[in-house]
Length: 386
Ligand SMILES: [Zn+2]
Image 1 (tube, rainbow, N blue to C red):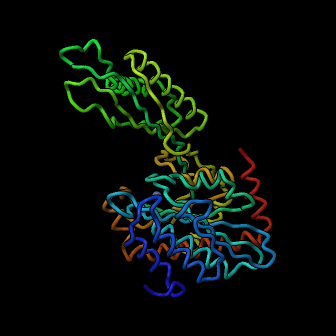
Image 2 (cartoon, rainbow, N blue to C red):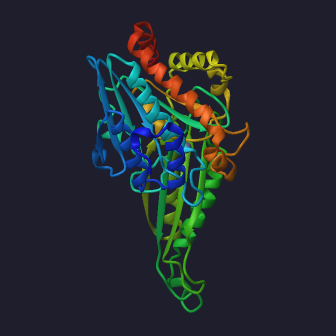
């Protein structure tokens, strides 16, 4: 492997693409980024906040008055690899910070390594875990970027909570003594059916999405299933309504356990992902920078009119600090994400140019933030608005 200080953004993007480590296990990927940042003069804390594949890199310039953080992700998807392009997120943010550190004369430039955005392991939603421990305290501005099939300056992420329900019953011979059996599977099936009914009776303007599977449903047809489990994701664009939906879901499970004389346990899988808080000043400022470079980026208003689709832990950060996750185009419009096509795009040489544009625009924005008092004021005013 080449020396870390010689690596370009594209080299790093390619190496992480090849490493293809899944969430919470990004050992080599995080080390590579840490080495690159260290080689470029950053002070690096490895295993930040007791998360082995997280890090915090800092460089103070001048009085270090303005604290600007870039968020790097580097987890691949199980089974398929970097089909979400997080290898490019890592390279974009690390090199935007390096570029910013060459321009800024009064500020602290920070890179936070935020593992497991996709929710594959122990540190799923690590931005939320880091936020809860105070990692974003004192930070004035957060910048990030995510590849996709278009350029955009912010869209609405849905709140999401993942839940696992385990029903417990009583085993019995299904022919000899069925009256002694209590079926955990019945509890699960009834829940699945009742949740389907719930979907018709939810608010139409809250972008409700409820997706579930039956994970476990018994071992043999002649034994009453003792254990059955379901996994659900419940989403909405409104966090208050999201909480109501979670309560409705819990009531359903309770009711179904009574009906089937089973017991149950509901476990939250990972933290609650919040919806995005958009900062129009920041979005429009970055869009203007892109237009200056001849990049056609759709206006914020258009993105906000579109139907929200995904969820991200970046959104939780946007509720704490003025933030923007810039969407950059590496694939043809309409390319499905988490697919073979997006995997090919994330590893292809054609991603190099958009990657370099992102690095230039984000580093320039960070610099402008430190010297443009009016910009800072308008970003803060936007943030204070509900
Ligand atoms: Zn992603």
